[in-house]
Image 1 (spheres, helix red, strand yellow):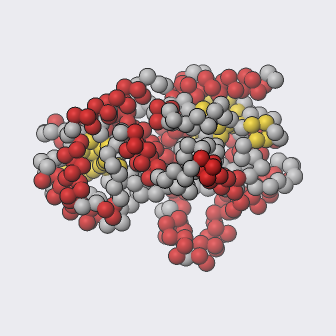
Image 2 (image 1 turned 60 degrees about the vertical axis):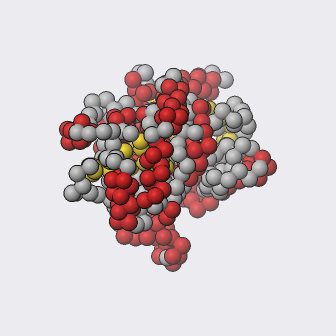
Image 3 (image 1 turned 30 degrees about the vertical axis):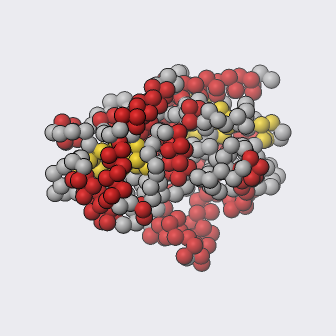
Length: 422
């Protein structure tokens, strides 16, 4: 079986698909991932075939215009409109052709919801497609609202379900490009936005969320429409921790590991000041994975700053993990069996921070604006509690029993068999 994977966005929008592709290849399948060039070395370094998509969010974010639009669009409406018209939309139109090219010879398409046009390509080629959002944002359910509408507050069964209607509207900004692609490349007529959100010609599109069912035992209204195989952990292979990291860890007590990934702190210097005081007050050490946070230390004896490190290797060596609540970081933290302190910023992060807190797998979340030295000290002390440590170990044990990528591949194989044998 040949699997074509389409995804666009940041590292969190790419890594689950790399994990899936890598596992599929080990089972004798072939896979190609079509996404922005920024991830070429990451994908190929994991032994997966790469095809370039013209749309490259990470490259756009390297430009001043890109930063302005993606971070402060509301403050610059005219410039944003021109940037979308002159840069984003033309790039997306080319990306649709890139997707189509990479799908040639494929038996199935796996796609991120941002990859509009994937169902159109599947229809044109006469092959199945499977939607795989990294977070539970697609299918309408009663238990909690769409996290893009209300990430922390339950709105009641009826309204919760209604909030997912926005997924039908997600294509509106790009439907012109999709229809141009349908007419000129696929020789298909124009269609309405949202027509292929859940079905193609009356046939349901399967949905896989690459997350653990252990976090959603209360959700019944997904029924058989959504499959949760478990988290997709990327095999670290031959990766090792840098010698300076191991040396630092061996010099004293377990450190806190702090990682905000690509999220920038609004006041990094102020956060640093509060962090140093809290660490000294509680006699703790820390390893900072700098990312885009803006925090780095050079002269603090008990704090080590590094550019990057494999979370699955570093987190288990930590006393506790302070992070932003992105799904990939959160999954790695859960697997490590260490207590978590989540400081969420935006998107799905408040949702995960709130859910893990309610389930007892993370401490009460705190916003950057609410961080004080006293609040950090309080949480550092809470990490020491036996019940907090035990709950972290409990979820680690539960996750160790599941194999998300293996389960997903079996599901994909069975779905493709039923599709082609009907």
